[in-house]
Length: 192
Image (cartoon, rainbow, N blue to C red; front, side, top):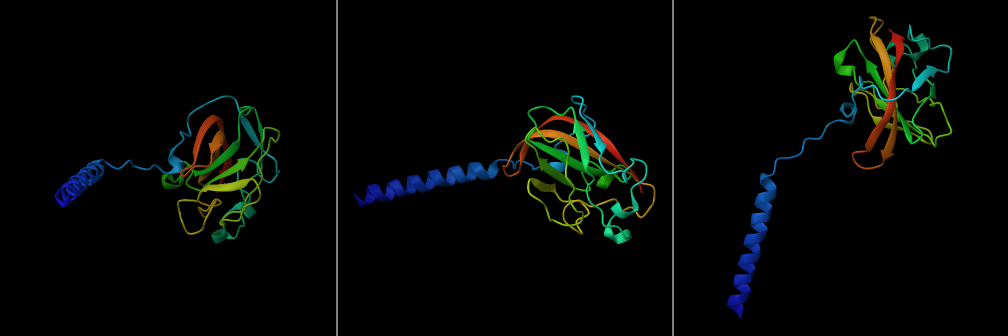
């Protein structure tokens, strides 16, 4: 009886070792940053977005809307939306410095605004902070990493072109978040 128990234990240990070895040999699945999961050049649908506040003209970044380093206290611009897909749950705003590639494609941060299909505008989130309001959230911090959340334009007046990719998406609160882009558009914020 003791011999049978010992033999069963050896077989079980061997099987566990084989499974562990097989799992260890599998190649790890690389994780892509959220900011790389969308194609900013992809054209889907006919959604449009426009500025709500008159200080934003799409040509020059308002002086107050730059980063703190250059004397501003920037926040995300409020946008009125039209033509977004009826199944939209969240509006994502991916902020870009198109002149400086490391900060393009969501490099200035990605924020989300939950909607229920009735509201056709985004709110405004303060820059360089993780403070959010109800229904709004930070999806990805800016890539510079010196402050959390959205980084307002911060080129120091070198004429960089800033834009935002506006995406209407379905959303699942998983880790990492899962979403599907229903339609999107691009809005030029202006130059700084």
